[in-house]
Length: 87
Image (tube, rainbow, N blue to C red; front, side, top):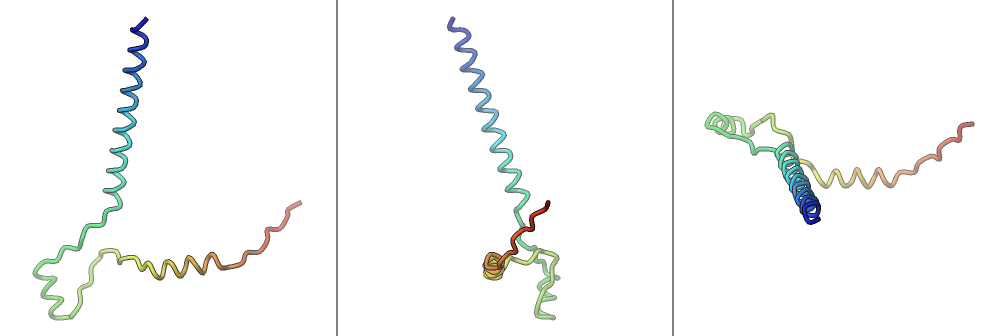
């Protein structure tokens, strides 16, 4: 009678390990997908900065958290019309 008890405990251990592995691999995949690498600057870029005073790249601009906060506050302060009842 101890064999079935041992089987279930081993089964639950392997299922728990599988869930832990899936969770860790998903976290790594999500972290890698949202990671933005720092801009790469070489000698030509430095020369352009010295000549023009600025450097334009294709990198996304950083988020302006103050502007995002203002727009969120404005959104939630708006009044909404009551929905019309459909008959």
